[in-house]
Length: 555
Image (cartoon, rainbow, N blue to C red):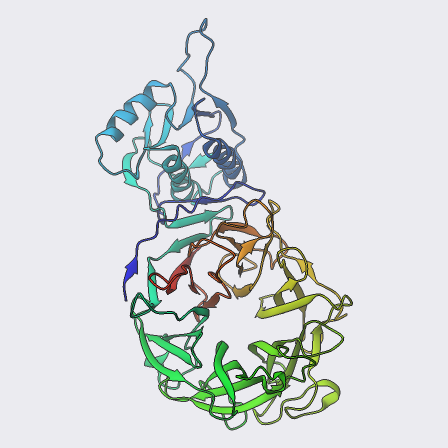
């Protein structure tokens, strides 16, 4: 599969919890300590808005880390005054100081457009990039390498004669708790074999195998996609996602007169459940009637015991009880609750006459009997409700759930019927208790007021600080000015109390005529240090494909 070099510039707005780019991991420079007490941060009066904002964040992070309060001033001086260069200064960008001019001359000798220089000349610390954008990278490099490792108040660990030209890595983001996201190249999982293909691809999902009996099989990546065909395509990677190969096609062979291959999701059993052994791979998806009869819409389970090579359509756990043609049950999501040893299947249900759509679930402890409302079992049993709004016109849907380190489960979903389908979240300690089912939950919103909607997905990792890292991604921004641009990915380091928006790691353009970016997939590695992400960024027979990217979390 081809690799696609990222053209993203992952710069983010400076907000209450700022996220910025950084060039590389720490150099772990150890010296006696360079005292910056009494220094002033000087920036160019011609600096861009982004550099001005990031300079303030730079000053604030030094205060938080080493306790030194630095002031920020621009380099402008009145014409009738003489420039005083005697002060102790941190020079950010192309200032009017002699040290900045000398550093720029050195930098100009480099052909690398991402080059930046950090050097100490007497009582001047120079931080300068080829552009303001690269200077921002240099600021974060400085923080990671020389400030984060500091142990003494007012001192940073950099040699008094330090002078180095480096190259910025634009695929790395640093947050204000010094957690870093390092992006891999974007890789194509699947693309049409012909530019004249009329097949569309959506609902890409991904898992990493973690519970296989043979240890050498743990770490294998599996990805699945929904298409306009009547089957699922399954793909496998043995090299952490650098190369992908289609393994098989999966069909619904237990329901007649339906089309399978819709809205599939993958799950690997973390424990023995009934006759299924730990490590069995489960596929849950929707099959719907070819003749649009909603009563034939079903949530269907498939299983594989050979790393996804072969699959068996096993059972339908629910059938739609629709009121008109087109109603049905959709978008299943599987999750295991260790305390009760239950497997839950959550899904969207628009077959209830009292609700345009609601979020529901059934659970099992044996993969034979699925328990629904009032403890009844069987495919004909009504499901339990998780979100069922009082307003019958609202359509909560496309559920995903992640268990976090505080013991809470967080559930994200879109709310169709509100403007541009905003993302909401609910929390619980038990998967069978979501409180008042008419409660919308909490709007998922970044600290700078951005909301996104449509087909959200969430995942949590214990890596990234005391509260780990929670990721939520969706399709588009909920506002009138940005709805044609790629959405943010939201990151939280406090169990979802606050979110930071970063540019989507797999960029795409939204138009009303296609489903690009629809229902992406997220999955964390077993150690929580790598996020695996799949999405469908392009539309059109000549360039549509499913894309993959790794995001490494560095603490």
